[in-house]
Amino acid sequence: MTDVAQIVADERLKKESFGARLMKRPELGAIAGVVLVTIFFLFTADSAMFTLSGIMNFMTPAAQLGILAIGAAMLMIGGEFDLSIGSMVAFAGLIFGSCVVTFGLPLLLAIPITFLFAALVGAVNGSIVLRTGLPSFIVTLAFLFVLRGVSLVGLKLATGGSTQLRGVRDAIEGDFLTPLFSGDAFSGVFAWLARIGVVETFKNGTPKVPGIPVEILWFIAIALAATYILLRTPYGNWIFAAGGDRNAASNSGVPVRRVKIALFMLTACCAALVAIITVMDSGSTDARRGFMKEFEAIIAAVIGGCLLTGGYGSAIGAFFGAIIFGMVVIGLSYTNFDQDWFQVFLGGMLLIAVLFNNYIRKRVTGER
Amino acid sequence: MGKPIIHMENIEKHFGNIIALAGVSFDVVPGECHCLLGDNGAGKSTFIKTMSGVHKPTKGSITLDGKPMNFDSPRDAMEAGIATVFQDLAMIPLMSVTRNFFMGREPTKGSGPFKRLDINTANEICVNSMREMGINLRGPDQAVGTLSGGERQTVAIARAVHFGAKVLILDEPTSALGVRQTSNVLATIDRVRKQGVGVVFITHNVRHSLAVGDRFTVLNRGKTLGTAARGEITAEELQDLMAGGQELASLEGSLGGTV
Ligand SMILES: Nc1ncnc2c1ncn2[C@@H]1O[C@H](COP(=O)(O)OP(=O)(O)OP(=O)(O)O)[C@@H](O)[C@H]1O
Ligand SMILES: [Mg+2]
Image 1: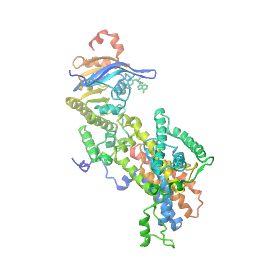
Image 2 (image 1 turned 180 degrees about the horizontal axis):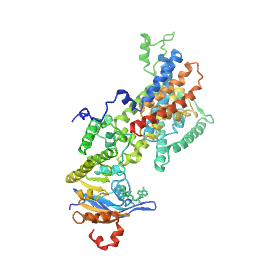
Image 3 (image 1 turned 135 degrees about the vertical axis):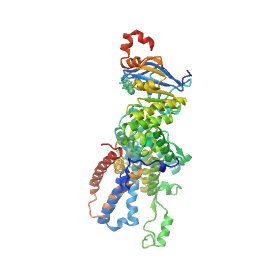
């Protein structure tokens, strides 16, 4: 036998339709959500929303949230939560901002230092959860406040009383790493596309879309990498196992502690990446950075098919969950609806997603 | 009899103020099936868990191939060639049969950053191992949660047989199995024993233990009542020991001598 296809067909197996197989995929709900939201805005929103510049417009916030959501999703699949990622964005922003502004470090040092601090906090979070056996929900809730407070105090120390640290843009001007984390990529290609008339231009001839914002590329790259790890490597199997049943996984030889601590560190690093990108983008950092993002990220992960109990979910699902967010946040401004419907939408989506996931889980496990 | 692969000396295990094991000695030699018997709560599962790295013994020593061993995790024990079917099976319902089968020890192909799961090989080994145990899987990607109790138990046994290079520990592996699958498991024990693997077999069924056992150790209330070799003990005596244990042994001093 060299091929799975040769595994004899079993007469106790009904031929499963493509639809039925699709129903078992965790990301189905999020993809269906994207389709529904797209249809909704096609009817209600200004047609500008689905032009190239409109798409970049909603993909940018989607990407910033999505990087967090993919980290959160992997951690949730591994059976844990991290409520501190929003505050971690502020904390990492502070570390990064003071590295480049206060200490005048080049990005080559500032970026690794930021990731190092984030990973360290992630490891502390994880170690406390694993050592004490307390729910990660509570431990990271504590860090939600601790990190937010530290960011506030730290900002005041760094600036001499203000809660905003400015001057990042000047400090990173001309650094060779800057284009990796801020601005638009492929601007040459877009300029060329504009010349041959594929991309619309302003009156002075510059393209309306100067390139792809780098966070979108990071977002796509991270989604692909996370999916590859989850589905095609032993580590992915360990993550699903650790989240599915910690004891069973550990008894079967999965290094559960190592897996979970690595996931906490990864999630914190995702927050640090978002901090670096957004701080470089806005040229300053403040204590409200990443406020409430932990909830949005977890909601995006849940819309993406992650079970709150762990052991099930998908990074691609979180990817689409974040896109739904971006579409609705930005899309509402293209419609006549009040922007504040967003909150209602958020709650509604979460409820529908949880009900749907619950149903899917029962189907997958054959639970009755 | 050969030199033991694994030797457990005076193992004690306390959980807080609960004494689960109060000094149990036990060994397994290559090519034998050593049955571990005893009443519910006697400490059988706790004992084999110290052997497979789940619990650290409170006191006592473990020697593997003559060298003192100190397992920090089940992973360590597995790397030393000890595979276990736990009483609770250690399966993840949401994951597929193949992913459960190889959990923690996935086959890979490629190297460096391109090292990835070898799903085809994994599926193939999994389906073949299950077929050898007398179960034809519908598909290796079926979630374990949708398997029947016996099918699930068979996955756990097939997995342990596949990975148990030196010692195979089976904690009540036949409790949910049908007639055909049970005799398959007993035949498998016989087969791997002939390959030189040491088997530890926990069961409540005297007939099963007499069918494959070379030696029999009876536990009672965290202590051994003694070890008997095949032929030294009758089914009735074994049954009495397993059921009544200490009371019987102390009531009839003569019995204690024979075991
Ligand atoms: N983690 C634990 N904490 C506290 N007590 C425990 C723990 N594990 C086992 N025990 C106790 O140790 C004793 C032995 O349990 P064990 O599971 O080893 O029994 P057993 O011989 O396998 O029984 P059975 O035949 O029912 O499987 C029991 O009284 C049990 O309550
Ligand atoms: Mg037991």
